Amino acid sequence: MLTTTPNIADADGFYAALLALHEGKTKAQSDAINARIILVLANHIGDQKVLAAALATATQPEK
Image (cartoon, rainbow, N blue to C red):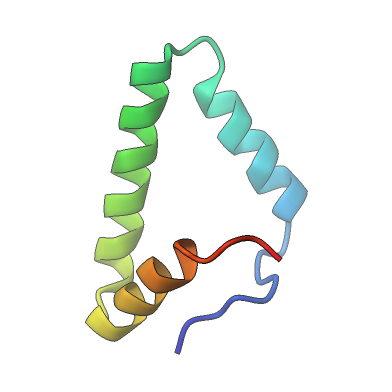
């Protein structure tokens, strides 16, 4: 089951760390970082059904 409701204890802190990670990087470097983050988290999740649900959810327009 895919969790789509807020689930990060310190969401603002995580967002700040994510922004800091990209600071001073080129678009290509930021894109590569994002791709690596996605692959690391996908590997951590590991469940094919959850990953498929995440892909499907990501293609839906924001509400």
